Each structure stands twice: as C-alpha cells, then as structure tokens.
Length: 368
Image 1 (cartoon, rainbow, N blue to C red):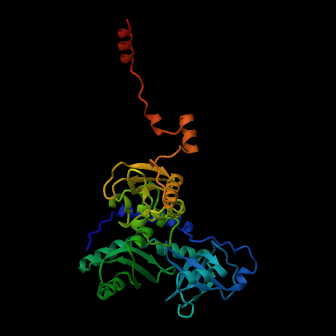
Image 2: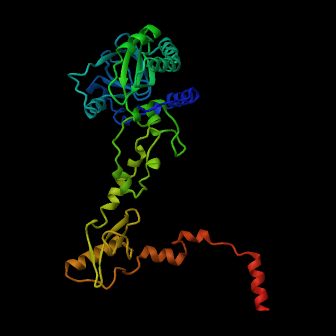
Image 3: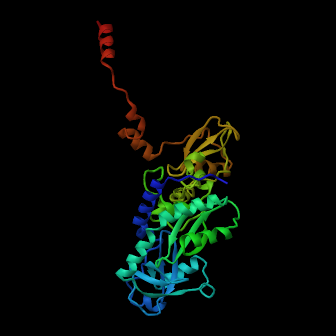
C-alpha cells in the first residue's frame, strides 16, 4: 500500500479551485436546447453535483429547467441540491453512452427549483467537508485500514455524506462505517475511486502550469496508452509521461487524431526501399513534417537518410516495377527550396554568435 500524505493547506486551495471551476466541467454542449420540441421528447434531465458526480432525474412536474438552473432532487434519504447540465433528448444519449439501463437504473425525480434557503443549507453542509475528511483519515489510520480517504461530499440537506476512498485491494470497512456514523452523526456511503478520479476531485496544477484538465473541464476519462506517446515521437520517460495521478497524462490523447491522419500519408513501416547499392529499412518518422528516416541496417542506425513521403512512395513504386534508383535522395521539394531561398528554413539562424571586438583587432593587426 502506498503511503499518501497531503497537506491541509494544499487541499483547501485545490478544493476551492475545483469548486470554482465545477460549473465548466461539462462533457457535451446542449446543441438541442433551443429547439422547442426538445423537452417534449423526454422529461429526463442530467444534474451535476460536486465535481465529477452526476445523476439522471425525471422532471415529472414539467418545471422550466435549462442548463445552469439549481434544482432540488430526490435522494436516499432526503434530498440533494445540484445543477442542471443537460435536458431533453441528449440525456437519453448520455445514459446510453454511459451504459445506463433506464429499466434497471432507479431514476428519481426533480422536486423543485432550489430556493435561497436550499442553497444556503447546501453551502453550510459543504463547509463541513474539509474538516470531516481530515477526521475521517485519522479514524481510518487508527483502525489500520489499507485505504485512503480521497474526498468527502455532503448531501444537500446534510443528512448523508459520501466518502470517496482509494485502495489497492479489498477493504473491510464495516467497522469504519459504524465509527463514521457515530462520530459525524450522518448516514455514510463508501465509494471507491481510482487515481484519475481522485485527481479530478481534489484538483491541482499540472506540469504545464495550468490547473488539471480533469478538475476544470474534463469528467469523462478515456484510456491512455503508451502507443499515443510512440505515435507522437515523445520520449518514453515515465516521469514526463505521468501526470499528478501517477498515470499517463490525459493530454497525450489530445493530438492523437492529428498524428493518425498525418500518418496515413506515410508509407508503411514494413516497406523496404531498394537501391542499386543497398536495402534501406524504416527507422523513424515525423508525421507532421511528412518525412521518414531510413537505415541501411535493419537493427542498428546506419547511413541514416531522411526522405519526404512523396519520395518514399516514388521509390516504392519504382521497386514494384523492378527498378532501383541510384540513391534515395531525390529532387528538393518546393517548400524546402522556399525555406532555403528566404533564409527561414533553418532554426539554427538564431544561434549565430556575435563577433567579439577582440577578433576584429586581431584581423586588423594581421592585415597591417
């Protein structure tokens, strides 16, 4: 079990930042909201609570609900206060996307639009979360449980709290629930989350200098594989590829479609280029630049030659016809000629060193 230590001050700042940005954590845009028949197709609405937690409810009273409206919804027990983020037909599509079967999923109802009294009561309940989380961690540690309480969320009426925890294995927390109920005098619900969900709930600052995507606007986590890093020619350094959650960064997926489209224009990695002198094998590629580097040895880099995708396809076509070029290099591309003529093709122009005054004196003395 990993040892987790989190400072109280950091948690307070991160939690405040997370709550401040929770309104922006929307996975979809309600592009059907301006259609009058949208709400007539279904009475389902999607409500968002603290951070990444969401739920689906029936608007049986046909209240005038739209995105951003605070509502009071049924809970077990009592009620909760959330914010409407989606209405109409798109809610059904969201449930289908999240593999939620409406026939088995208990869809509760929207009670009313939240009043000032409801919002104030919910605010006072949420103020207890930080203190409760610190105390809950101390209790879990005293009981010797191999788990970490990552976050605590109070229900809008303050009668119940959800304790989000992280554990490597199964944890018997029956005694823990009894202690929590006696200590905090509330109904207790335990919910296990992963490292990514914990980062989204707690928040923080990433190595890019900005707040974590998962705690500001992202809530639907997609699997991230090392193939995304290899496709983008990113160095396979675990320390650079890992995010604050110690998992692969979600942003590795952001540019993958662009690289995939660019890679389709390149020849296959298994294609060999035959010349009159040697056979060249794929070594590396730069999809965005549209270039491929070939080696004369299949296992080690030797006689590395970089070609454009057009030149590589040209040689492959020649080999299929039984022809072999003298060398891999072809004519210079138009873009390279323009860069060469204008002086903008080589970034090393920024590295030109200034001539020292002493060098000028030496030259003058030699001339004399």
